[in-house]
Length: 311
Image (cartoon, rainbow, N blue to C red; front, side, top):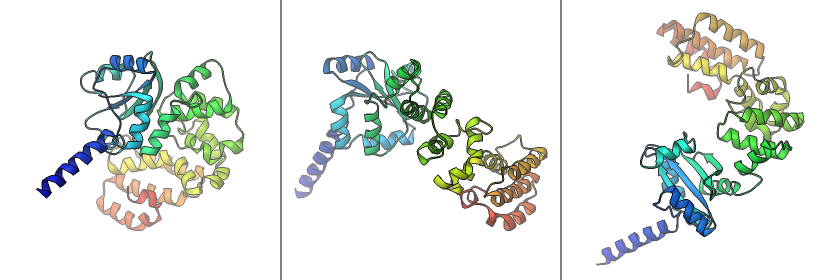
């Protein structure tokens, strides 16, 4: 009897805990918008798929928490849709959802006020959603002000951050505007590093990449030599690593020679590590296993720790 009572208590505790979390309504988006209008709220939408690991993490670890429930249930009509079933595919096309999880804050008229992607811990997640309620950080108000010609530094900084987080191609134009109103001290600060570490913005030979290369000594002081040099050499490292793994089918002897010249021209503090990686890449390219093993014995110890495991 005691065991049954204990089991019932555990079950009740579980459902009590779950009920304190985010209350996702089993309704259509149209119904959610109607409820939001009647209650003076906005709609929060979780766009997920059943195979998405980060989506499961949010469902199991974040949404059931009391703090999340208190916040979301007070501010939103909450809905979640599998992007591959039911209403999901249509909504995915309508709102251009192609990364999972994607989270949307939708105004009562059905327009997107704010969006962001990726899983995170509860407190950080709530902070990101609160940014979607703030006129100074939400995507829609920022876009409206930017499109009206506003080029204030704070607005450009926040707008660029939002667009880069979303991997939006238009981020490069906003970054260009931002660079027009910022000093070298600001650009080389840790606060602005998110621009330079983004692979879609800081592509090789872009103006952002050239700036990073030309001002690397200032970046060394604020970001650190290892991070800066790794970022500058990221494309070369990627080429070499994919050649070793066999993914890079376009590699040839001429390109291997060019990589060596590029490494020398960059004159980075990590040059020795890069040249060691290149030697291993060349050995792998020959297809001679014996040569590859002997080259690894000589050169692997010279490769930066971050790339050793990959090689």
